[in-house]
Image (cartoon, rainbow, N blue to C red):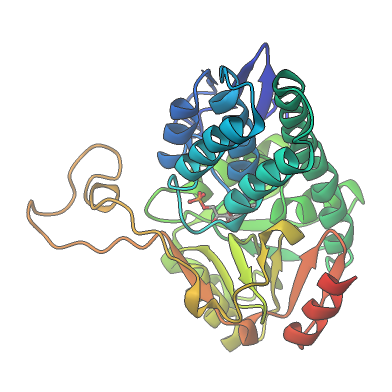
Length: 346
Ligand code: MRU
């Protein structure tokens, strides 16, 4: 990323306001946990890993002014802050993973005086951010093994540097392939209704000077039939123990199209995106967002007032449609259930 997506500067969380891209590159500063909650809710910061990182720093902001002197009082405040941040968005498990890590860190250092414990929590949020940068590089390295010179690649939504601390997951594979001098051509689905593909993925790829062509979501089948793409790579918001994968709405349809056209469909995600407590994708909570995202996509109404609308923000791709999961620990092939068990036991 030419500019950092998420940074901690002078006691504030500094974020790129992604709702304004690509027309305006503006940073916002969050000084309160309420501002971080709002930024996650309205997608100023978005993408599973980035949401987790923002929530970790949001936790720090939420407890920073605590005047508790005993751990039990501090813990009560911390639980309140993390419970509040957990209500911002339901699907990306990285949010809950990061909040649990912050609570566990406090519990493991409860003997510290409260000011030192606050510093320790800030250090933990910094570590989550830094680790994510390293994880994205590793995902890129592993995933690039699947990319051959001259390949066309389809992606959906945005799983790039904007969705992580830096470099991305699905886009990390493309950035790395490019660094290895492989020539690739990316087709980016626009990703209705919030257009993360059109607004963010094309922006990132163009800055990296990777060939990218924007298509409407409805054009993916035709692009595959014309043999313009040889694989699909997407990110993930939550992956169940059997490999079922929740990602941006429309991903499931792309996976079905890929299967029909015999094109491998890959999911790139850090291990923090796996929810091994869920046996299948059936129980992944799917966020339903406001009607206006569909009826007034750019502030101008495009559907009759009073029309009924359904706006699920994510869908679940069944594991059987996924050729491989690209993680920082390597590429996982089917059978996912047993191979993921081995991975998470290590
Ligand atoms: O609603 P969003 O923009 O937060 O959805 C993002 C996605 O679905 C991404 O593909 C996913 O979080 C992976 S980001 C590395």
